[in-house]
Every structure is written in structure tokens, then in C-alpha cells.
Image 1 (cartoon, rainbow, N blue to C red):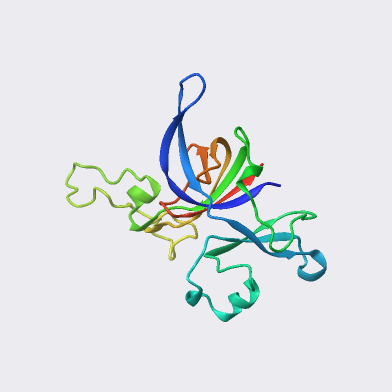
Image 2 (image 1 turned 120 degrees about the horizontal axis):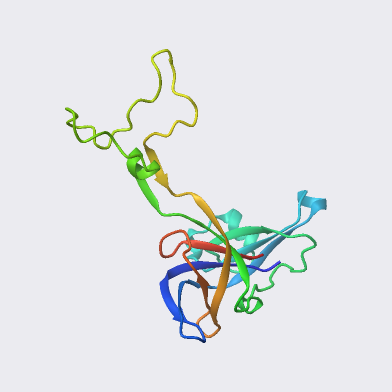
Length: 202
């Protein structure tokens, strides 16, 4: 299974051989190192733990320093489930494993939008603009009948929006820049600039 960690840069567009425009998202790869290999005998499952990027060593606690040893000071670590992993601790996860045209699955944290009302969060139409309604244009309206003495679970109401883990499937690798370690994925990827992106081959 192919996998790699990167950071979202920005959206742009490239052109294919026929001159058609392809909207893409650029993801930079800052170096991926295997920090641990989990096995069924020890951990109960099989996975590969990967460290991404670099960080100020003074901002890493002693437990992480002991875990990383001499591998480096990583900004983030992430695990990928994998049956019979062939990688070992200290191995590098290279961008060259991906090729143009590969179908990938991308996971990232979406943009946080704070506390939002029902119109933006759930697409409610709001109240009518006439018949004596003065300040109810963006209100949710009734949330139940008169016999109800509680709010049902799952009721669509105002609340925090965004900052969710989003997975987008069936995206294609449009281009790979090996010199700058940038992979261009067709379409949009969740998150802001600098968001950690997990790219997994399907």
C-alpha cells in the first residue's frame, strides 16, 4: 500500500497533453521517516508509524525524544494500517512511489468556521420575509411539538462548524514535481494552507 504525509500548499491549475485545464491542489512533501512498526504480537495490530517534517527539538518532550531516538525531531507522527509491512524503523517514505494517474484517497482536517447558525451550517432557508415577521429571517423555527419535553438527539441546530476529519476518495495524481518534492492532486483537498494531508493509494 502506498502512503505519504504532506502539507497543503495551495490550489492551482495545470494543462494536460491536449491543452485542457485541470484544477489541482499542490501538496509539499517535507520528508517522511518510519519511526515505529507495529506488529500483532506486540501491539495487537499491524501498522507503520511515520514522522513528518521537522520541529524545534526544545519543543519536543522527553517521551517523544526517547521514542524518536536519533531519527530526528518530527513535527507530526501518523500511523497507517498495513498488512505484513515491509518497511523498517529509519526507512524513508519516498514520493517516487506515486506516479501520474494513480488513484488516491486524501484525508485532512477541514477549515474551522467557529459557531455558526442553521442557515450556514445546515442550509436552512430561514423564516418568511413577510406577514409580520420582523427578526426571524435566519432563525431555525420550531424544533418540535408542544408535548415534547426534551430536544431529540441529532436535531439540526446552531453550533460549531468545521475542524472535522474529511476523507476524499477517487482523486487522481495529476503531476509530480520530483525536484521540489511537490505532488499535484486533481480537485480540492480539505483544510487551509499548511494542513497535514494523508495521501493513501487505493
